[in-house]
Image 1: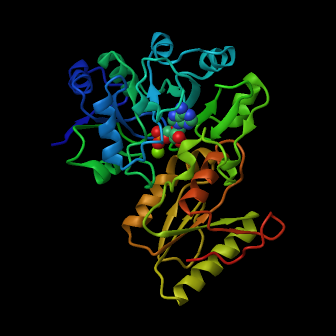
Image 2 (image 1 turned 120 degrees about the vertical axis):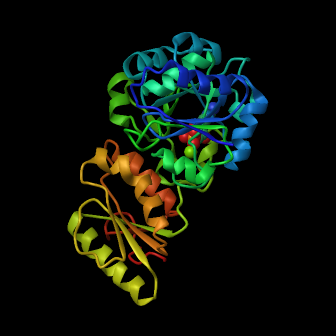
Image 3 (image 1 turned 135 degrees about the horizontal axis):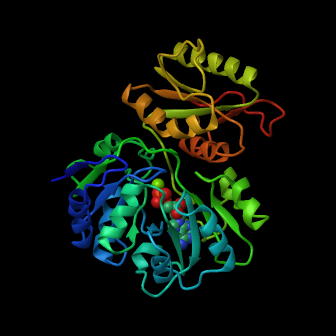
Length: 355
Ligand code: AMP
Ligand code: MG
């Protein structure tokens, strides 16, 4: 049975939070809103409870979870060492969409870290998430609340679609603010390394700690380091095939129209995920809005929406890779299985896209 708790972002109803916190303490699984996407949470210090998360999601056991904390004391509990740069970033950006990979403490069970000697930690900036962690009085291990490989959930409805009847509780806190997952930064070695672009732009991080290396997998390069375990798996994918169109605005529009026409002739139902409405000729249209914030907020919702409309192919418009755009493009390219159509002179000559 799944208990659904509706809770406004700034609700002060202690009773409701205590019901969910009680479930966490009892070793149950609770989906909850964060400012990035919905999380599927369990007591980080309870291995059987954490194992349930992996089973529910169908997540490979070597893909570790992020531990969500609400206090600095909890940071000391889960990290073996907290380097200077981590303290600086935490002071500047926590609570917020930044996950730090740090040496782990002995208290963190292997099942959480996938056996690695590091742990990923984040303090979320959502009042409901913070209250849940505080009321449970323990760190909460939580990946995104979607079945592995599917687009991440930005509405409680998405969690219901994937897990109703399977998880013990879903807290419905409305739409998430940011819409893409946290930025994951590895500080466990001397040189800071960006493992996953996300809700906090790289530029902001570099402003505080200087130069950060970017893991090649962020741009779709080869996965050569066991350090970035999550990156080798299929991600964010709707049922429909996805094609991403990258290039200058004019070229993009023209190419999207051409592809839609080509797929239509091949008898395929086509959806477009675009930043601004124009005549594409597609069967289904999802418009994200033009600002990078709007695109980030609605990219996963768009993929899920078009999927529900039973399209065969989704043609997604690429955006510039700056600010939140780096995270958006990382998610779109992964969702497409790197099926990218790029303007000539922009690294690749593929102009067709495989439906
Ligand atoms: P999700 O919870 O679905 O947003 O995924 C969590 C992300 O954090 C995945 O990409 C994991 O591979 C990554 N992650 C979690 N723990 C670690 C760790 N100790 N080292 C490196 N990456 C990690
Ligand atoms: Mg995920």
